[in-house]
Length: 220
Image 1: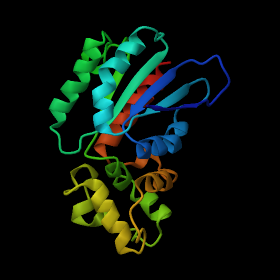
Image 2 (image 1 turned 120 degrees about the horizontal axis):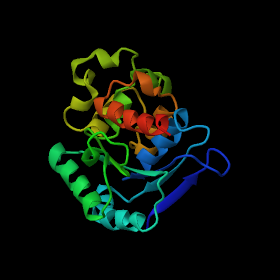
Image 3 (image 1 turned 135 degrees about the vertical axis):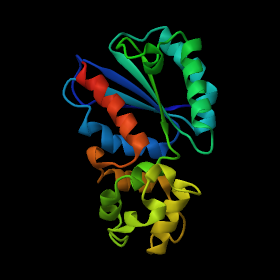
Image 4 (image 1 turned 90 degrees about the horizontal axis):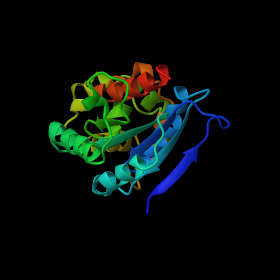
């Protein structure tokens, strides 16, 4: 079963509705804190959380076909998945194919036009790279972490952190005495994202995601 939570930022009579499909609760928690920084006034959004990446990818085509039967023109669908260890281009092709088979136009296939319905975005390589992209937020959430940790070579480029970004963040926090009894991804996502400022984020995949949301909002 899907976990669906509606977040109403304003009363009815909306201008643009964003339907955001994510693979896990930690992404949902982060977006709860981030989206209100941009999705304001007449716009609204809904986050639809799946039970992992496999669940999302397995159900995506049917989910999009369901949207096709009723979705109005003032709705946009944003699909957000982690790259993990997959080939980024092949993963993007899979996402685009699901939309095509549902007869929905994507931002990529529209080639610069504004008549698209679906935006496919990939987190490289995992959500935690977005947290590494805002070291000020990491330090604010967990003050025992050095404010200069991001200057170390292994953290300098958030989307290129080797060996898994959530594992890297776990090691960083545990080394400073946090989460001795076990790393809690959803709690970490909620805590760090509360301090994040999107415009200072150094993660390229975050920038691409945020620019897509900004474009939708600015054109409506």
